[in-house]
Image 1 (tube, rainbow, N blue to C red):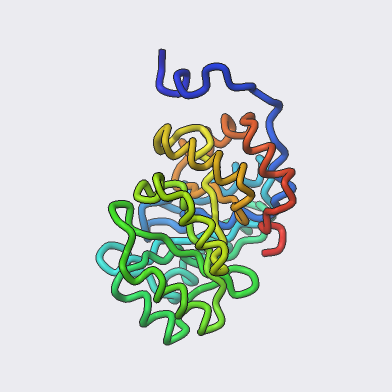
Image 2: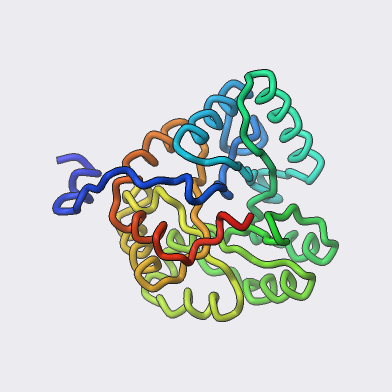
Length: 248
């Protein structure tokens, strides 16, 4: 029995969910060769074409910004976006495309916040992620600084932070502090781990999710989205009325 077969046994398989109601995918890595996502322009264009085919009418791509690995700036990101937009036009692919970033909470982020150097989504939302090994000691400070400087924080894929699995109240605490939570679609098929899938489902059941993203890095991810579209909890989230993707 394969990995996904073990995860999905006894689960209902529904008709593929209509992702067009989201309008926007607000977490992806589609600018070529600036992080661990798209490798080249051909890759970027073909992935964007496929995301349009499965229902998205707007893409806000979010390259990593991480001081030790991905030293992207607004200039590198927006410059890359411009090239992607030009190539989409050449290929007659009509889809609205924008760029923000996925900011890693490291020692440089607080300074970027204070200097108001962040690329944002929609109404001044900022997408940020945490280390996977341990909760950073400056999390509360980062949230405070974002909000003090007029930003609205969105925490990327909270279901993937294993240090909160036995402290589920932490998610509600973050929501109560005004932090929006963004779920990865692929978490619903156990792509990251069976435990991540369970937490993702619990977050949906608890009405804690405000944004849904593909976190698309490659064509393999898009293939797996097709499986995720048949999952009960995705249908449940899309019909919950809590998602804000369409406002971006």
